[in-house]
Amino acid sequence: MTDLQGYYARRASEYERIYARPERQQDITDFTLHLQKRVQRFAVLELACGTGYWTERLSRTAKSIHATDIGQEVLDLARSKTYLCPVQFELGDAFRPKPCEVDVVFAGFWFSHVPISRRADFLKGIREAVGAGRPLILMDNLYVEGNSTPISRVDEEGNTHQARHLLSGETHEVLKNFPTREDLLGLMGGEYWSGTYFWGLATTT
Image (cartoon, rainbow, N blue to C red; front, side, top):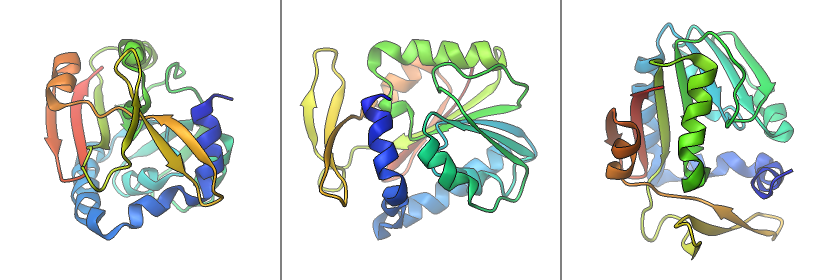
C-alpha cells in the first residue's frame, strides 16, 4: 500500500466532508452540470473514483460507468450508494487501467496527485487502455490562499506537498500539485475552464 493509498483508506469515511463546505457549493453545482452535459448518454471510464461522489452525479446522465480505484475502503463506500445508470466498480490502478470500450474517460481530483515525472506515463496508460482520440475530462482543485491546505514542502522535482490532518489526529504528508492553465494546455491541449475552487479540462487521449 502506497502512502497515498494508506491516507485515503484512513480518510474514506470522512472524505466527502470537503464537499460540504459552503463556499464550494456554487462550483460543485456548476461543475456537476458541466460534466453531466459532457457524459450524456456515454459509456464512461472513471479513474480514481474514490467514494463515488462524482460517480453519482455522472450517473444522472451517463449511459453506464466503469469506475475504478486502487483503494478497497473507498470502493466499499462507493458501492453502498444509489446510481441512476449501470455502474460497475473494480479495483484498479489509475496509471494502468485495463483495456475497455468506453466513450469518454473521467478522472476527478486525481491528476493533482500524479507526480510531475509521471504525468506523461499517466496519459499513456489511458491511451493504451481506451485507444487514441477518446474524450478525456479532468477535474481538480485550484489553490486558493487562505482556503486550501497550505503547501508544506516542495520536493526536488517541483511537486508540492501538504500536511493533511484526519479527525483521528493523524497527520499525513500528501503530494498535491496545482498545475496552471498553461501547464495543462501545454501538456495536453484541449479546453480549460475554472471556477473559484476547481478547474476542468476537456481534451483527448
